[in-house]
Length: 148
Image (tube, rainbow, N blue to C red; front, side, top):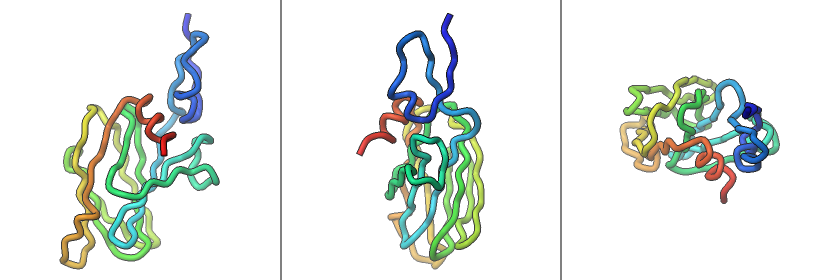
């Protein structure tokens, strides 16, 4: 009989032997997305599974990675301007406002690469706010998160 044991995100990389089936931590995976100077900053929990600790993993740019089938809570904010952030494939749209946090909650149901669309509400287009969402298996997600 296989046991189901819950581990921090890194458990997927370290286990898989001795009959254990490692999984992501219970509850939603919280990811912070912050707009600043016309780019997004993505903050993921580190090995302790908690945000706002010393082991958080920060990835700037235009690629958001998500594990398939895991409940996600995105905390969206800004450090300078009012931005918009949209996930068209999920029909979700939210604003990012300095000193306020808005939440998007969803569970990715299919793997693949999908567009996300961002904008700074000044009337000019900032392509650096657009990017893609990569939905992958939980194992592939953890391997990506552990990489450079």
